[in-house]
Image (cartoon, rainbow, N blue to C red; front, side, top):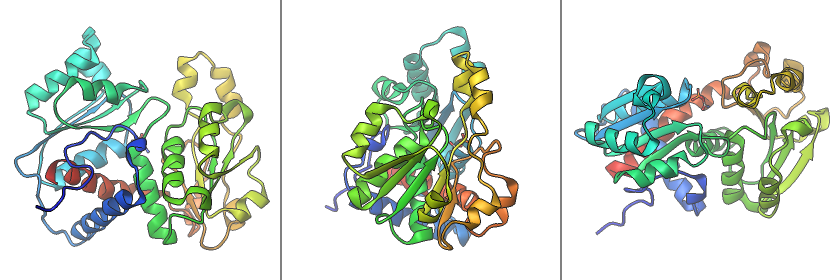
Length: 321
Ligand code: CP
């Protein structure tokens, strides 16, 4: 009997669950197949008869729509709720565990996709139900499917996942995308990959995270997006300063002071290597000027499309097999 893929019938709550570059390659191979199907408008419905629930407790444009589109394109029955905190019984005080148990029952879900503001929400959801749970962004630490779509984008654009210098810019304290991406870059490239963090000191990545990462990749830290940093980069990964966490902490004056510290202009983009790319998980709120969109290095729109292919691949590997 052929062995099942490593994602089959497993929850995917953390990027730490990926243990080998081979596992990433298998997912990318599947994503390539999905891309071909989508681009050729081929009907491919291996999840026909299966049920996918998509529950979002935080705002989202890309992750929500791409998970819903991915599940529908694969033929699944889809139950999707955006604004769980406002429109579901969560607003009456229902616990996360009870909500997940309920959704599993009411939708006969075969897999549950969740975005939630708590760091451990995917693990809590996982322990509350009997079907796999996929983390679509949790708290300030994890956005594992974003990391995979980011790496898939890098691979498609630069044809490699090691020997890279990836410069991560902006809110490295609250941003979850850079943390998951840094970990997967460490996994696939080890010390052949360099990650350069650029942030104001108030928004530097947590020290325990930095300490662990330094053991696995070459890590640089800068406080300015200088010409030297730009010239040496293969990828500049911009991120926004995350207003919502400042609001929650009552630190809006600090947000106002920090939000425009790093802004990518077209002139800055042209200082990068010709083959280098500018990425952003989006939404952007000013940290990449619109004029950069015209530069061939701007990859953030293509990056979003990778999300559809990678999420189709992942859902199919988890419940299609
Ligand atoms: N990149 C990302 O997570 O975007 P959304 O918040 O729009 O899903």
